[in-house]
Length: 146
Image 1: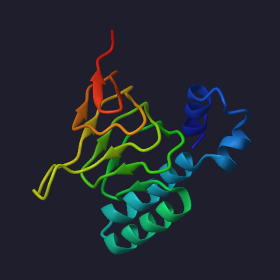
Image 2 (image 1 turned 45 degrees about the horizontal axis):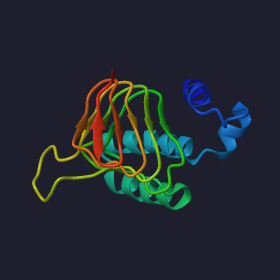
Image 3 (image 1 turned 90 degrees about the vertical axis):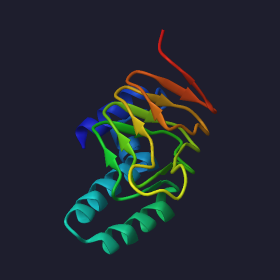
Image 4 (image 1 turned 135 degrees about the vertical axis):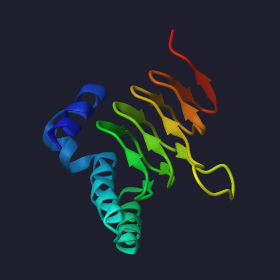
């Protein structure tokens, strides 16, 4: 939890204090809800995990499926409308901005949501199948790091 707070303070110049982040950052709340829901999902309490994920969506405006795999230090900034699908994998040190959908690619089964590498920044309204380590994605295009 301290690591999450420190990551947000490092990546958001508007964050003034740990207390402000703890009380006012819905992206942080959504990630913490997800960690609980993911644990429930992995321990066979899938309906309860889904129900709590819907409660978290109602409270935060961010929808994260409990089966999604999320690494350390995910920062969802201005997260309203962010969607993270069931088979999404998000590695460490990722920043996601408002309106990003890590959604499915159709009705097929198996892996159908994107994998996001380490150190990736995904900007407003981006939709992608995968973003490599250190990459950036903004509004429907991919830019690799220089």
